[in-house]
Image 1: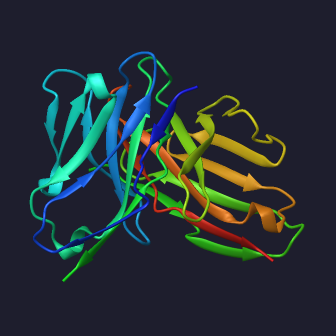
Image 2: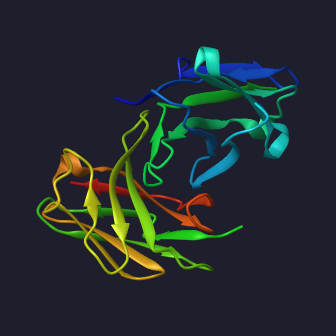
Length: 114
Length: 116
């Protein structure tokens, strides 16, 4: 069965430090890949997505993610974290031709220390 | 971007009552909407796919008689939790895709249900 793994439940970084959130998936083929952010009281917001092509994708708010087929990974990165980045981050996958249904990882709670 | 809105954002009800949650696409039409359930500290689990003008498609393990979904128009889908019990307490989130099959998925703010 398809699955998405986010190994880190909680991550704490200092403001200005770099960030990497890990995401691994288990599928037979390369799915569509997404990163979402969820802030308290708000809906999920799409940070970036990968469908095909360049494996390094740029998103909003200074985030980027790199798809590595050999590692079945799609890690999210940001070179310098801002206090406003504190939120819950979800990796998600969608099977191509899968009826637009997303499977989410368990999420990573990011805390930013000032 | 496109906006998806849910109402109510939170609701408290007594055990045995039914609760209806609305999901609206405010500035676009959505033939398909999705309902998710999120437990505390856990991921979003897809409950069902809501199709305008037809029956919803439920994921395995989701009770269709418990969670009634109606997608009566291109901008509105409703989720009714029937005869709610404390174990139904959760955060329910809807989403709708804007711009075709490869368009972006927009999420509502979520509705927190607490059953006493």
